[in-house]
Image 1 (cartoon, rainbow, N blue to C red):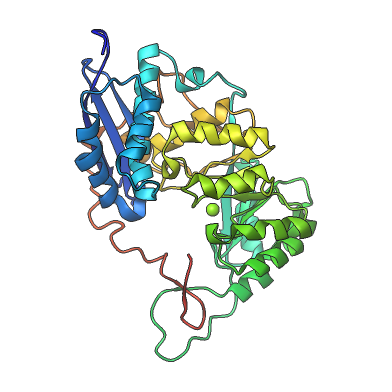
Image 2 (cartoon, helix red, strand yellow):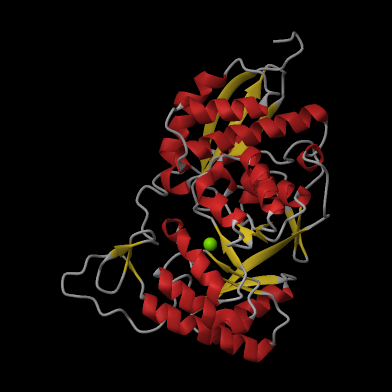
Length: 404
Ligand code: MG
């Protein structure tokens, strides 16, 4: 190690829930006074194991190492557990990876997008989510987003489940988040028919299936939605069913976006190299951070697949900043999901990307350009948030447990 190298002196996980959603952020401190970085490690459904992976395993592994060797450190963390590739471990690695990119940016006195090759665009187009209990309410909410300048809008009837008759449950059915896939697949095309009849075809519309239906129903739904000219159909299949994308492709000219649950390269590789999807929409911290995400984006570029990184409320603002820096530099950028920064997130995370007229903007500060105010973050403890998750206890009308 050269005498001038800057080394890692501490790695720790910070848990906070300023907007009611548990977030995990990694802070890396260094041998240079005042120089540190932050990274997103939010797996909100399993915060404790991620925190333990960081504090108990990555910290002792990384203290004393050279902050500049990001690629080496990424692979070190990835291989060190021997068994690798899980959302828990990938999130822990992401926190380290993003923090190190932030430190490198500060050392270079450049925003991350400069280090990654410079801007391909100046603002990042986002999509936002409109839902409602009936097609008219969805349309009303869509028009409100349009008035705010949002160009791309995802329309959902009753969240992700569709809406209609109350499921008829058998006696003794267990409690859970019930939904009826039949009602869903019947009502969603009707919603699109209604909205297109009212606003025409120029407005880009998206829809998320949330992997909630049987594969053959996904084929049928894609065919039914073809006439409504979707910008994309999101997560039509579960990762377990990706072989079925070939069938959807054969039957419907509908742009397909896939991958918010992906954690393993073998999940996305066949879909990209066989051009079976049009948008790859991984959750960046779930695949291990900026380092693997930029490689994934390059793989997509070679095969005409655009990016659409996952951007819900359980990505911390630090993770959203990482999304935006990547979106700015990736030639094959498609769209960015964005869930907004409800108060008090902008105060707890100074430097949040800004949304103006349908585009997100990163700031020009060195590194990720975002920080965490730890004193404020401590005022919003995670507590019981996320200990028992209700919405993932999904059941079909007869009570069968199923994917959320
Ligand atoms: Mg989704």
